[in-house]
Structure formats: structure tokens, C-alpha cells
Length: 145
Length: 110
Image (cartoon, rainbow over all chains, first blue to last red; front, side, top):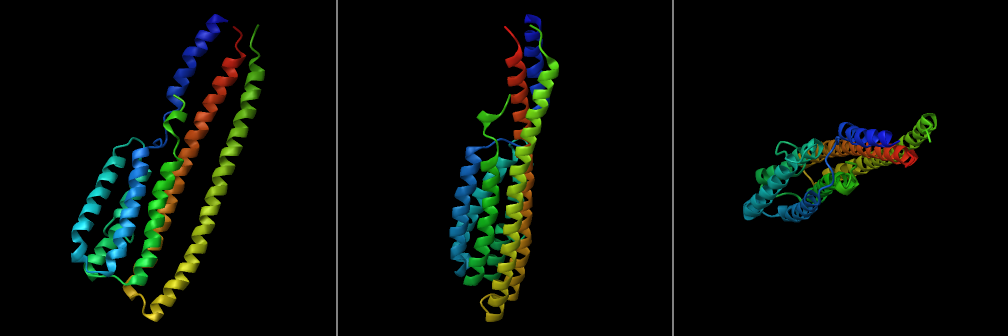
């Protein structure tokens, strides 16, 4: 029986190593804090888009830099391609979420109040998708390895 | 005392089937609810934007950007669902290996 136990003791960790390589990254508190914090900052800045873009250009640049940092952080986490794709879509200047909104604000000078309200809903929801995915990832302590 | 591998395998087979059933059920319920929510939102928003456009509250360019933004938002939701499917796969794998360890090791006599 001792031989069987020894055999299993060696076999099971081997199976775990081979079979339990993660498909997606585990939960990361820093990434979650970043996305929820940036969502608040982004929505707050959008409220100011009824005013001239040039008045808020430095705030835009600061927020854009913080978003770039969050993307860079997520990009270097292993098995985190989906979250990185979500950030890229949200931040795409040629798209129609936050990156596109900033380009439109700059181009138009200022935005219609009703448009801002509608757009905030889309952008808020988009940040939520990233946060929800992060929050539902397996916590590192729960990973079998 | 010899281990009855036939019983061990039967126990594992049932345990894995239960795990798969529960994991999939939870994932499908969530994905269906999300899909239904998108559909309802899309319908309501389109009505609101059309009214805002005809009232002059938003421009044609705003309207177009909102419609395209809706498409991007749907892509975000689809990406999240793809991520959640991967989380479900990892959770399932983890649960299966825990089941194997607990079942097999528990049956080995000292």
C-alpha cells in the first residue's frame, strides 16, 4: 500500500501540472481597483464635455495616461488577452467608446448634453464589463496547484 | 485492503457529471440573462435616440456615434462572456482535480 500511496503522491501533482494550466488569468485586486477607479474618473470628465475641450485638455491627457498605464499592467499579466482586448476596444480612438468620445469632443469642441448622458451609459457599461470579468476570475487562493 | 478501482471510477464519473451539469447551468443562465438585457437595452435606447434626434437634442453625428457605440458595447459584452467561459473551464478543471484527489486519496488505506 505504501508503494501505491507513493505512486499516487507522485502522479497527482504531475497530473495537476499538466492539466491545470490556467486558461485565463486569476483575479487581480490591483487591476480591479484600477478599472473601477478609472471608470469614475472617465464619467466625471465626460460631464465636463459640454464645455470647450481646450479648457480640459490637461485633464484628458492625465486620464489618458492613467488608462494607458492600466492597459500596460493588464497586458503583462499571463493569460489576460481577453481583458487586454476589452481595454483596447474601450480606448480605441477610432472606435465609439471612451477613446472615440475623446476624439469627438476634441473635434467638435464641445458636446450636446443629451449626447453625453447617452454616451456615459455606454461607457459606464463598458467599464463594468471589464470589472465584472475581473471580479469573476478565480481567486489565486482557490487555484489547485 | 485492495482498492476497488471500479467503484472509484464510478464515483468519479458521477462526480464529474454533477460538476459539469452545475457549471454549465450557471454559465448558461448568466449568459442568457445578459443577452436578454442587451436586447431590451438596444430597443429602448434606439427609441430614445430617434426622439432626441428629431427634437434636435442630439446631432446626426451624435446619433451615428451612439449606434456604433452600441455595437462596440455589444462586442465588450461578448468578450466578457468569452472570458467568463474560460473562467468556467478553469473552475471546472480545478473542481475535477480536487474531486480526483479527495476521492482517490481518501480511499487509500494507511
